[in-house]
Image 1 (tube, rainbow, N blue to C red):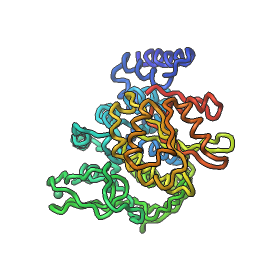
Image 2: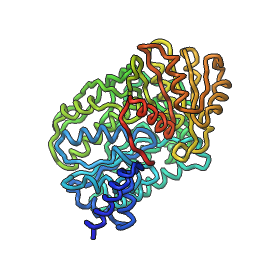
Image 3: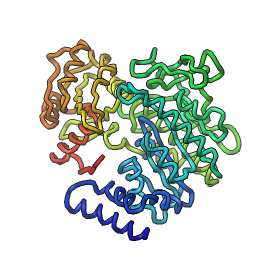
Image 4: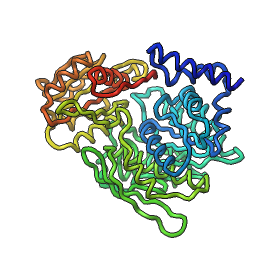
Length: 467
Ligand SMILES: [Zn+2]
């Protein structure tokens, strides 16, 4: 019966692709779970070393890609969902396609889906990186998620073989989840040279999950990530086992030094050049190192650390996450704009580029983007103001953006508005001179639209997505 269900599910994906409807990546998972609701658990049980789950608001796609490279070079046969959906059906589809002979399942998991995916897959390693407020979060979703994750970790701790937890010491909410647990590998950023002066609006003051007092940050790095402590109780940033000790950001990536433990003797440090731009990617890189260490420890397999460092250094940005596409004699850099914290990081990345800036912002309000666009008022766009040579605004809610920039004191003579993404791209490229880079900040569905335009014009290969 399981083979039959798998066959039918696979056929549905094939048929969907033949009909040119897209959906080839996720539909088989949907069909499989309809036919066999426990298929995820059945397939996961076949994985000799079990599953690794990676979840976060920001960075889970990139970290899963880095970790997939690190796990493969370490000699494991890996099945992963880095090309598809991060919900249960996407993971089921990945297992259906690639579980044959795989020893390790490595899955990026949507924050809200983590509890059900973990219940099915019985993970060996769980990587939790950050929780930021997506958009405005008026209803306290973030607190609810932290509570759900804590319940999940309590359930997993009661398992016969509890998973190793790879947790971000710099996120107070994530750190609270690891408090009083003994199977935790902490990661973080020790280099404080990129600290910003204060918490941005996007980064909410965080309350101590132990006693409720407002936390104090001595160093703010990305949103509410940084070096923190509670003035009222003993809760404080755990000292990370694996950390970024030195980071030099460049327009197209970074030099990053990572401190890494060894089995015998003192920790070592390794410096790599990565094409992933921005401090948020420093967190992704160090999380991948930490998870890679945890997997080696859990499977008791010796590790070639140099090989792991090499493939992490070679991993290019994921779809739309700093990816650079050549357009004749110009370049376009795609920086997915999902939420205020992510966009603030994109703005900081842009400010690292030399010279005048050409920027294209595309705002949609479809389901995958979030229908409330008021989050654009929480982004610190203003540091771009003195550096902008041109700014083009597009997408379904382009005029909301125009209002936001007008209130931000931007020179409206430099701003052009064109809701249609194809028109917006033409206008923005026309303002960008040969040899220069156009920085595009689209929301999720706007990125799919933009990508479609670039594909039609022959600049990139087609990409199917049905999220
Ligand atoms: Zn406290």
